[in-house]
Length: 88
Length: 124
Image 1 (cartoon, one colour):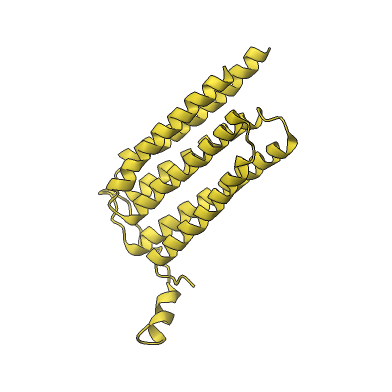
Image 2: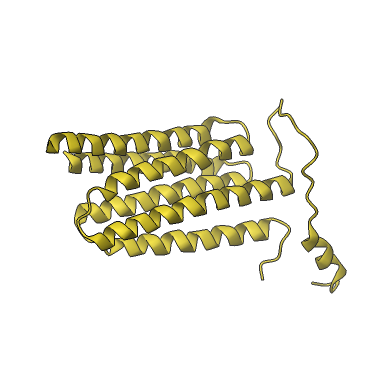
């Protein structure tokens, strides 16, 4: 029962990521695209964790760590180059 | 007994999915960048918390539990920071507001980087 529920949550998160992809494509500004990309980032992290529990390969938790931290650094770099700061 | 435990974990999972769905719906339907951020920045954090809580009841080893809790703390600290940075950048770039927004012009922050940049080397 819990495994079935986890698989359903996995499918729902995938569907919600595709819904947020609409805002990435149609967003009027770059900030809209960044917000939608942040939502997709969170969904993908949850999907990695659920898949790691379902398959039993728990070393994918470290992959999720690296994914969160690197995408945080990437988003901050994009925002710095969009705004009035300097990248270096 | 085990059936009730599984039922509780399933309710946690689907409550998290519901909150993420609400955040995504706000992201799609609201008229303005600030309102979109208001919807997604909060609902997403709460949905992530609920799903991670449901996952943390299912793992066996202690190291995996600690890793899930550290991931929870990371997401809780990164998501508001990113939302605040995106809002600040959108405000500085002058993103348009939805009609009917109450706007007080008291948040004009001084931006020091541009002046230093313009005073420096001219062909940079």
